[in-house]
Length: 132
Image (cartoon, rainbow, N blue to C red; front, side):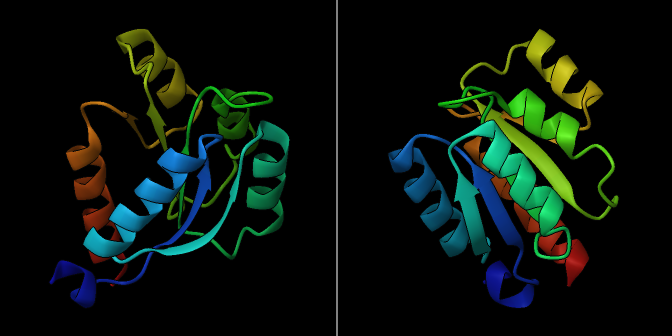
């Protein structure tokens, strides 16, 4: 129900695992009501798209370990984004040190792929609600 009452978050995903990417987008679409606007499997194309399409996305979800480059590079590239655009990290390596580094680079939140999916969904629902 909440997805029907919320704005649809234009969401870009930087994730190199196709299965995770497809499952995550389907789950977020069903539970949050996102609009997928694209994806990248590598740091450079992901950073480039996010910077060149600054008016086309509300939320970017970034994995740290990619086929080429890393999510840290994506975070660095997007540090000058407007405050209403959110970037979150979704990684299997969300240690306290990694969380701290991601937040220092501008991540709005950091979620562990294996334990924090509910928290990611809650974050997205709140973001969509704020945008409505």
